[in-house]
Length: 419
Image 1 (cartoon, rainbow, N blue to C red):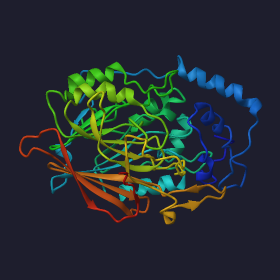
Image 2: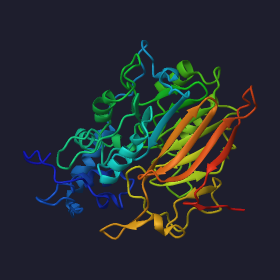
Image 3: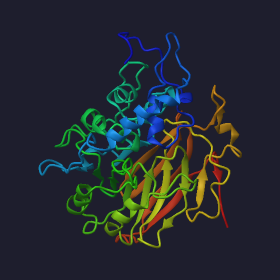
Image 4: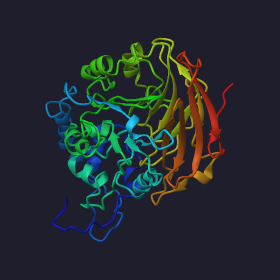
């Protein structure tokens, strides 16, 4: 924090985040540019000298090595990261969970999204990861915990029964310790045995569905950067969750995408690692990382037999900059059903003060009631974009398939159909 003033001049603007590349060096450099001038409520992105790049490279290399927070297994006592939601159900037997991705920007729209998520009093809220720029303690305080510092703080809203947060690549740009040590103790289900979120992976067990959260962020900032899942997570999945012997319709949550329809990179390693646990099952997979809303047609990998309905919901707090004109296209095997398209839906885009055209931020509200899972995609002002539902196939005996129904389609998004 700068100086001794306790008066924050305002929140960061979305302009601060436009053009941010995936390179960790860029995020470290951006940290140096966000010190506001006096009396500027929304300071512009300041110029920096390329001569200063080497200290930031050295800082990033340090975090990749010995200063990374250890990846730990769950203790043998307590919930061990598997939480029974049956005691959290509403009077109608439902549980509502609001989910946002790439939310931690500390902007006005991030606060609007968080407030909208909490407006319908969900039992739980979940963040899919990324606290910008590099997940430092100061950034967690300002961007998640509502503490005024260099900027006015933004507060992540908890559900009526608790909240969770996944790990993203930006948290690991500072080694991950602030995420693990500062943020996780503020989260979790207070009425559970664990009281708080202990690890970056967890499982929520509703009567008819399972919500499984994995940590793809921890190894996103390594030399290979392939998002390999750590062995303690895989051991926990096998021994505690045990989806092989206890199969159940599953919503998978991660920060990184399995595949991209927009040229932003594929991360097949986690899918390969979890595939043996979900043979002959269809999953609903929600991820972030790409800063957009996109709904994919059902996809099944020919190599590892994992099948899913994939949804990218990385539109929680970052600027939604338009996709390259080359994407989505027919050469991608993962065809895009819905996505925010500035050419066909210009009313859902606006221009920032720096001239960047950006889309509308939002989040997802999941409702589980018995065997039915409904997912509604909402804008920051709670305008409904799309609502769909999933039920397990096979009648009384689940056959591993899921039946999807479009419950409400206001046609706000462009529909992409490739023949």
